[in-house]
Amino acid sequence: MVQVLQARDATLRDLIDRFGLQRVQDSQFFHEWQESLPEITELERQYLDKVKAGYLNLIEYPPLLEKTIQFSIVSPILFLADFFLPPFHVCAEESIEISDEDEEVSVRGQIDILLLKERFWLLVIESKRAFFSIEAGLAQLLAYMLANPQKDQPGFGMITTGGSFTFVKLLYGNEPQYNTSKIFELRNPGNELYDVFRILKRIGQL
Image (tube, rainbow, N blue to C red; front, side):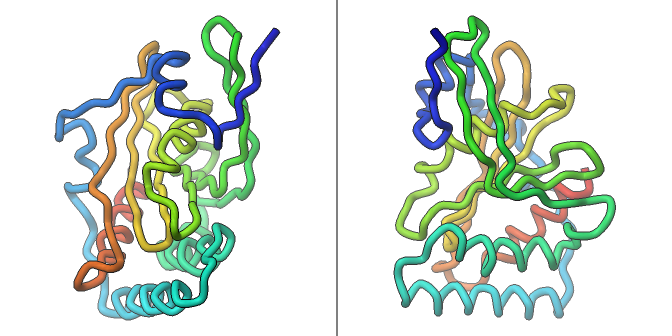
């Protein structure tokens, strides 16, 4: 009998044991978040400053839930990056299911936001409540990314709690490999949404 595991309950150990997932520590594995990042304009900086100010306001009125993070922080950034225009489009609450090689375990769930470039998966986005850590969403995001039907090119993902962001790269194969970017924090001096935005734009160019 097939055991059904909800993606939100999956752990990294589950993905390692069932799907052969491996973490790569080579800094060159995920170079896209650091190299050839596009510049941003002064108007884009002003817009991102407002998004940050909105987050700092919202965090004073808890609880800051996933849906609020999606429409007040994630969606404005995607809009600014032109990801609602061709050749991109956005899907919400996309259902996925993956099974291990022996079909003993099936992982099911719903992707918060799936960004497509034409018909190809470009970016999987998972949002968590503000009081969660990035680690709380990593296994869930990777489970979603493993369901990508296009296995011949890298998959990219982003996890956010509204105030923290990190990116993930996954290479598919018999033993899928992944690594993450640094964690960008809105509590840090300046505005690290600039970096988040530039990385999103870079992924959109791939």
